[in-house]
Image 1 (tube, rainbow over the protein chains, first blue to last red):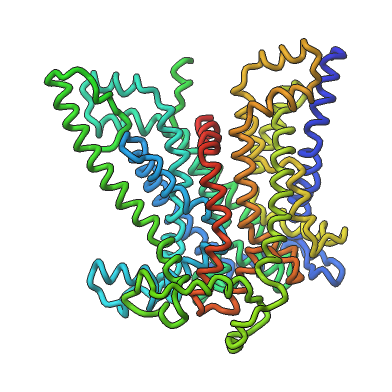
Image 2: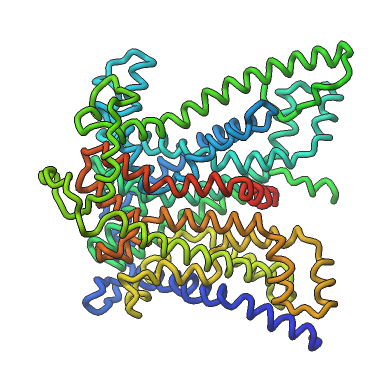
Length: 303
Length: 313
């Protein structure tokens, strides 16, 4: 290493120092500490007790609420991610057309996703889902003629509470839309011209040009949104007053972790739960990478 | 039906182009109808929220709903703002009287303090770190960057418990520090990634020219690259501000005293205590969301450009 190189490396590490501190004390360290804690019993007040695999044994064999929370989280993810993805791609395709006032439409679609994840929006949707006087059932009965009394009870019903969460999450399609729109605008126009010369109609162009061109963005979004929806918490906590009801039908994993850690002070058990969530996310991500042959990278052409 | 082929409608008026233009007109009409319908669906909840916030306690529940209540009950707004989480629903009589205690003013000031400082920390530190990744050569740069990206996969809940214990043990429980200090330590992988992508799009000749003129690395970062990164900086700043404004889990864990709570927690308190008073809940929720909506409308030109940069990777 020459002295100039050494100098550059030293200044690089000075620039990186905040990140390195974070990486050690707020990321790497805590991940390992949580792993260690997951083999312990600890209520913060009394000394830590090492219990081996007890937490995991209890979780997998004696705790139906754990399975329930895992199921609820998976249910929400597998419904909200694909539907949200199709919708946001469809909206992005619409937004990519040259029609008058496109800027206004884009703003209107994007705005809800910006305000999207907070308590205020959860409060709003709690009111929309109100079975007797809420907007949703009113609209349903207006459009289909079904009396409001026969409409789903949404958050008050074990069967409809999870679909309600999915519907609420779809209000945020604008976030994905913006990213797909950027992806669409990155597809070279010449490819469409070539397809048209070859006689492809618009439908064929969509399948042979648009979708492959968009696939890296779809892949990225798929990973990010699955990671995100595994971590749903705020909306559920606010809408069910921290209970995950009715009858645990909206008890998602993060809510369960929160309950165990900060309501019952079972730090060890909560850490074990958080590690299971971590593994679940890693597994989902790994599977997506493994089956990512459908992703088309333009760079591959040049090899 | 919907693809991005939009040939210029001003093309020559031959038969082919004429039929093409007609097809385009039809497509455009369909697209416009779909967009209008979609926009109505997206805006309906917000209109509903506005409408509810101007009603009386009982009018709220009438079906079919009255979309424009008459008269408009503007007093719901100051009422919602000044109610603290200290009274139960039976105490309605006091509502006309101004209350001096913890109101949304306190929550707003707390949230502003946290959001502004975190926003500053995130923008500064993420751009610093991104500069190193984008512009400086050092051993282990590749693996370290991959490690950085990998942290995006780590759910906050895994680090949450040990981090809580760490902050509690150094006496930061029930203070703003756990909500502000981490922002100064890199600002998160996503922001680092976004800033790095933006730095990479700036020609390296800029740095070299500045270095020949005697600029240090920090000088290149501060005087040359940062001023060119306004769209990316705005994106990071707006996202971080919005994130901290709406963040719920972290304040929930770290803040205990009512007078230290943020808007998100204040609103949650409000819901627990006045769950059936939807006119007040909607008024409060609107007031809490307005700053974000305004910020978004001001910043959108910049940060849509900023997102486009990462989206295209």
